[in-house]
Amino acid sequence: MMGHMARRCGAVVVPLWLASMAAAVANPADAVAKAEAEQAAAPPVVQPAPNVGSWHVREVGGVEYLPLEDLRSFYKLMVLQPKGRRVVGQRILGNGEVSLTFGPAPRELRIQERLCILSHPVLEDSSGDLLVAKVDVLQLIEPVLRPTYIANRSAVRTVVIDPAHGGHDTGTVTPYVREADVALVVATKLGAELKKLGFEVVYTQEQNQYQSPQARVDTTNAAPAAIFVSLHLNSGRSDVKGAQTYTLAPAGKNEKPMPGHEFSQSSMALAMALQSSLVEKAGAEDGGCRRAHYSLLNSLRCPAVMVEMGYATNPEEGTRLASEEYQIKLARALAAGVEAFARVMNPGTALQVQKAPVVETPPPPPVKVDPAPTKKTQPARNTQQRQKAPRRRATPARKKPAPKKPAPAPKRNNKRRR
Ligand SMILES: [Zn+2]
Image 1 (tube, protein in one colour):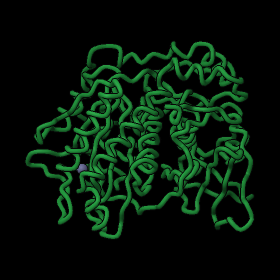
Image 2 (cartoon, helix red, strand yellow):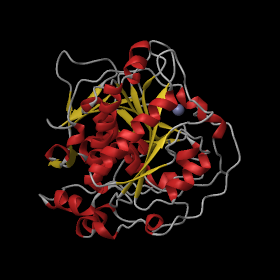
Image 3 (cartoon, protein in one colour):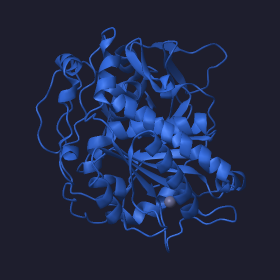
Image 4 (cartoon, helix red, strand yellow):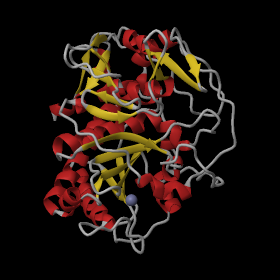
């Protein structure tokens, strides 16, 4: 459908999954706490120096930041701050078709109207310029604004659907709804929709059976050209509601990148496609695209997201989640989101999109998440290479049979636990 095609505007190719719609804001989730016990750790490793071209990177508190001005000029956006709309701490960049709204909370970014929670707060320097963490630019903003530049981009054939919990593990149970039940029903409906669209569908479980995280990882990593979509319901205060979509949080400065980090960009694009579709097609409240340290996502060798479809603990949303009518809406919206994502990940489709008037600016440097040493590339040359031969960026891990699972890492306490 045309509605999911990407289009070009200014220096930015904006996928229409970002069609604007009023957003509602939910409070931060606490559902991730359940996964804390599973968190994996890795020995510290010194990251290679980033190749940032002409960007003015500065380090603040151990985090690399870029001035907003670099971002503005790179994407050829203007500072938009219409009179009367100014909110303290808020800054809007845009070009009439795409807008990035930073603030008012330090970790809030809205791309069009879609809420994203940044990994690091936006800072303000002494001259009043805002600073945005480089990792948020490269792994959140860039893949959403220009998905055709995503590292490891390759066609999607298989969707691994993970109905969370199962068997003795019921997930969240409230007077309104049971998490495992809804996850399984939506998963089944989603699978049927995806098959109609021509995708292969693999379930991590389909009989309300408990599967260990490792079994889910093994099933996923054995699937060819796959993406992973895990379905959950959230829990929290009774007044909190909204759908949220999580991707693996970026590796910290002293953390060893995990296999899942190789797919940071594509996972974020997938998250945005699903989250936007949930809001626009199912009418879900927008709780935003977020990052979390889920050990399950650490080990997956494909684009992977966890969708918290809503709060089981909110009377209104919990009741809605229990209704078959809404479950069908959720399944259809998720299928549409997968389809939108698959379109831009398809190298053939992406090439057509990129062919039109030349993109004037080089892409930012590729995200270095592979611990193996790689050669530096110049951003300008990189653009040319990517435009001429985007197909060469194959994903070795997904062309081969299931790679060996990584050794389980020791437990640890994580600073960014939620
Ligand atoms: Zn869950």
